Length: 443
Image (cartoon, rainbow, N blue to C red):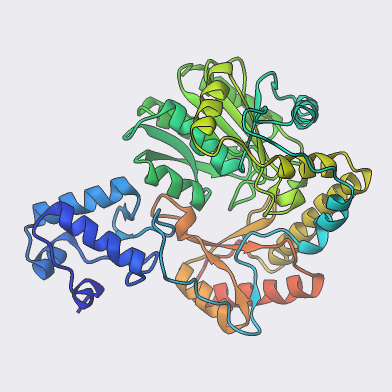
């Protein structure tokens, strides 16, 4: 008996089936990632034709509730755009959680100290949306990294910026070239808007130019690129790869290009941009990893039309990002103590990441992490590897939510808080687990 039968779904049409499954997700009856029966089995269980069931699942895919993958069937999305009463599973007592991609709290600025020295503004309706001082400082930072910064606006984080840019230019059914493996939350945003993902393979230097050309030739209307600190693989563009990608993008001048520099100064490497003289483009710079995830603020730069459209959509919705938050970020950005702390955090993250990579390499384990806060470890079977690590007291993230294709299984390990003794023990545990699972090690 499947979960659908246990939930007693009844439907007389494709729309009723879609609404019933969506309601089951909202009530917590269906969990994120849970697999659904095949179309024929589901049709038999609910008393509908396979054609009707297929139409219902297609509607759920359009809403971003379910994900269908070649040879893997259909499952509830890992983060469907539905509020749910289902609580996330707690981390077992005593387990070391390396799955969430968080920065090290000990390396974040002291917000109480910053607030005590921040003059908090009183903002009223009709006042400018963005603090001029924050915009001016952000413009200097972006110019120092070689990014055009004539047009800027403030958004509630990088994903908010990307979502608004895509809404400004794309429509349901448009195709977006994205990195695979790539950021799972971005995939969920694209699905929620009915956009079609075009996976582009990456290596340690970022998107592969020929694969990007293939995706654009297939009709991709937009491209989203993470130039450094790529999540989950840690890929980072170097100067040569950025130039190669820019050459490919020049062949498709109408494509919208979005760069997501979500890690910014704590990525652990220099920024190399793919942005040139384009008609439609945007770039984000988030403060979440350097200053704290609860500071929901990012700077968005782009072509004049894109920025104007985003600002217009903000006015129609929230109006602006809190000026208290903007003033706090400005205070942190201009504090020499915080500047030094961010530089120290970047060095620390790089050292911890490289430590695990070195320990894994010494034991013959192939892994990736050229920059950022994570290490990506190929495995034979993700479920087996995650379960085996949990038995040894480690919580790692399975790679499935980050992959758009059915190959190259892996796990993601966040190294932001990893100590040297932990790196030694974790690398030994991973090596033993992979050795027991099969030949996935390098010679």
